[in-house]
Image 1 (cartoon, rainbow, N blue to C red):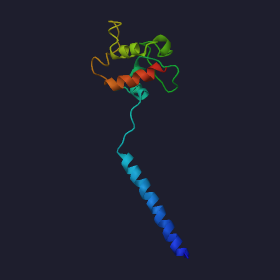
Image 2 (image 1 turned 90 degrees about the vertical axis):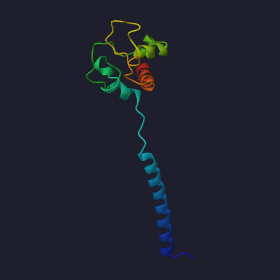
Image 3 (image 1 turned 135 degrees about the horizontal axis):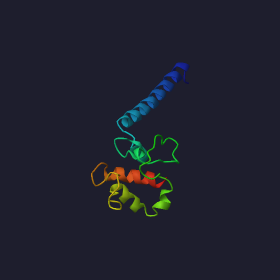
Length: 125
């Protein structure tokens, strides 16, 4: 027969074990940083900085957009081949030698993975 005190001790131990497991999981995840998204890279003035030249009319938080480059809209229609869009981001000077768009890949402004993420983001606009 369990006494009330015994039940309280058992519940406390079980509760403590649950908290310890949760704390261990939180500690394991504490050192991890969420991966940066293509949108974050595109908006980051130290990385893609797309908003300095391009408007993104379908993105509500794309504020203070520039007008130097074309608006980034209907990108799948404009670039049916996603690889062509990526090549444009990597080095727009290939298709337009007079462009002011930085050659993000050629000049290693962005990593290949960052270019992939921005391409995925922009392609969805």
